[in-house]
Amino acid sequence: MVRLRSKRLFIALLLLILTTSLLAQSAPSAAPSDLDTYVANSMKTFEVPGMAVAIVKDGKILVTKGYGVCKLGDPTAVDEFTMFAIGSNTKAFTTAALATLIDEGKLSWDDHVYERLPGFVMYDAYVSHEMTIRDLLTHRSGMGLGEGDLLFWPHSTYTRDDIIHKLRFMKPASSFRSRYAYDNLLYMTAGQIIPAVTGTSWDDYIRQRIFAPLGMKHSTVSSKDFKPGDDYASPHSRVDGKLQVIPLEDLDNVGPAGSINSCAADMAKWVQLQLNQGKFSDRDGHLFTEPRSREMWSAQTILPIGDPPPTLVTLKAKFGAYALGWGLRDYRGRKLVGHTGGVAGFVSRVMLVPEEKLGIVILTNAEEGGAFDAILYHVLDYYFQAPPTDWIANFKARKDEDEKDAAEAMKKAEASRAANSKPSLPLEKYAGAYNDAWYGPISIRYENGGLVISFDHTPGMVGDLQHWQYDTFKAHWRVHTIEDAFVTFSLNSDGSIDSARMAAVSPLADFSFDYQDLLLKPAVGSDKH
Image (cartoon, rainbow, N blue to C red; front, side, top):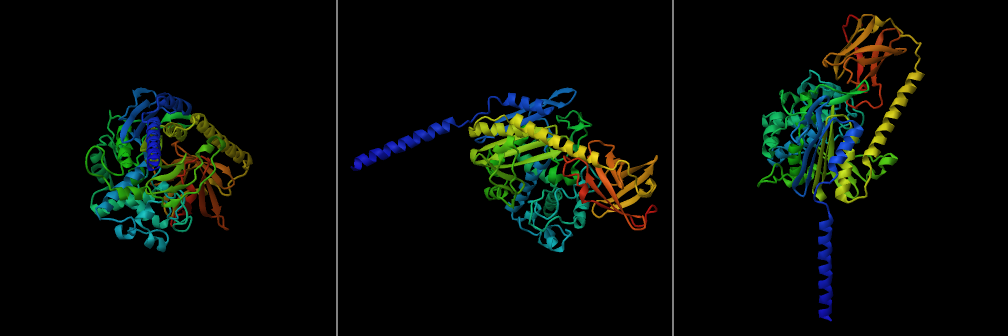
């Protein structure tokens, strides 16, 4: 009887070993065979001039490849070393840099910010005292979505220290730590803790402590680092309905939140390190320790779960959270650790699937998130052995629906406006110097029979104020990549101007055009007011 049981146990163990071996053999380890075709189809559908893709699996770099061209009208092809702006994917580099200091005992995630940055002040005194480095990194400060981004976007003359000083004038949109609202300014603030502790600028620290050890030889922390003849992609955006090349954006004054430029070959090394939980893949040692890696991938701020449109119902998540420089969610039973990045003319995506030892990077030189998402989920489905889905068609349907809804909203607004109404005052009475508590000086001048608005610290923000209705005008910026805005004046009982409010015209305007956070007040002592 004992022998029979032993024999049965042996057979059961043998079957288990054979089954496990077969499953391991059936799980894909190579890159998808149709990757090139799928990328080409996505680029064509979404009109993306150039793209670069990297795939890391089981510790090996399987793909680092470029597609398309660097610039419309120029045959120079994208390759694995072509540089793209990665936008907010920079945030994970900033948290990794801070993690190295925590490993060295120089910092803690829960250090109070004011102790590391003397003079750090938020609008609320309690928040000023209680804000920690962790809070800076988790989008739960109480600030509104993108609040204050006009301090750097479009490029302004304000420095990082100027912007940190202006945090004290930004009214919260919710209570501290109660709600998620994505922000950039506090990530930049977190990056400035690095020079405060080490005496080395964030820029040099990233170069010396991350780029150099990983061999990311092509990556830069500023678009100003590019020289004529360098291998970099040009940004593209739709201007007046047509895809066009636009200038590179200067993001130096908010660098730790989004100024890094990189390529498929370098980002593959970054992803390799992340999947290896901070350890180098080609030698002993680590950039940051495994405990720091676990912390950076641990949920900090819970995200609301919405319902995707019918064409994307498969993407409905069971959980969503923001960690430290990374977003968390699930897909087909796996935990995803990822982030997107957006800069004028570029969008990018980095996605890690730790339990599958899988990492994917997609860089583009056009503002088409559907293009990289379609490729991302096609690659994930391949490795997850999921039924095929036409993600290109599904994301294109989503894009078309969003654009249709926005067009209808703008058409409805146009139809409902009182086009025959007149301003309450002669146009020249609206001219003068204005001031916003956090942005600073904004000028409106009477010129050639019309009004011109300019943001004094943002050279590109000069626009013509076209009358819309009553005391509302529409700012049509002379740089057409800047989103148009409504400007509505409020009057005092004596007919003088009390204030002006702004709001984006298009429902699809990027949240970084945070016009709604401005309150323009006539400047004290202005001759015009």
